[in-house]
Length: 84
Image (cartoon, rainbow, N blue to C red):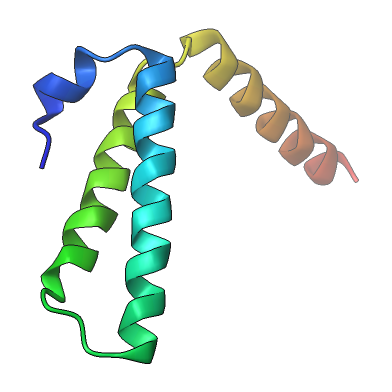
């Protein structure tokens, strides 16, 4: 399992690639679990948490301006609904 500091040291491309690889491993593990008993069922939980860590750190690195645009779009929709 990677520590958050190790993930933060990666580039965005490396994080995306790592996330993709882990998601692929998770899919294969779930498939094997449905067909037969797996040796370490906790591996599924570990992989899910690893994906969550990477996604969280990727969202931390997003520019704040993108988040403000999304927030203003939502608040603009609410204002239109209130005026109707």
